[in-house]
Image (tube, rainbow, N blue to C red):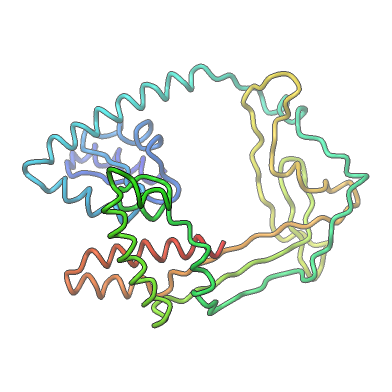
Length: 291
């Protein structure tokens, strides 16, 4: 919503500078369909912060800027047209009908396993070396605009050479990150008593299971499906409040990014944009591996 408002406001005050859209809640579809039409200024979705440097370089280039923004605009126009055509062909049902078609589970034959520990737990200082084997490298290469699946990308006829060089640099910095403890990892997770209440999930105090402390508002599918197909909501998979079954739900938050900002800023002060981007990309991949 904030990007939508910003685009409208830029249009109102006739601000012509390019608008870069990014973040976990954004997408090319959202940018092309909802935001770009709000302003004539170049509006560009950037998948990852590490790609912003390349985008800004093209926008600042006197030789490339106009062709680049025109190409983006044409691409978004075509994407928006196809998206709207696809959307218009979908049929939806009302919420009452969707709730009647909910996924049904026989709770009478279900007995949840009680977690060994209920409540919150925090893990700090996880050894990053333990996370390295679990890194998914494919998104790492995509953040540098090298597209392909790891390890096949290393032998790719088009980008293989660049991928090998990039991977070698990444391994060298990764070794420093681990050995010199450049980054700090933390994880916090919790397991709580829970029951579904319609489309929602009620979370209870782990010390007082009769006291509701939070409620997740889950969405139910309303897309029209073929006969016999249920309209799912996440709450369907938690024992309902009237079943007299004590069910449980977990949640977690992880990060290996503590220290990334300081290290990246150090590289930037040294005019080393390459390694500034590299540390961010590796912190992101380590964060993914802790999940």
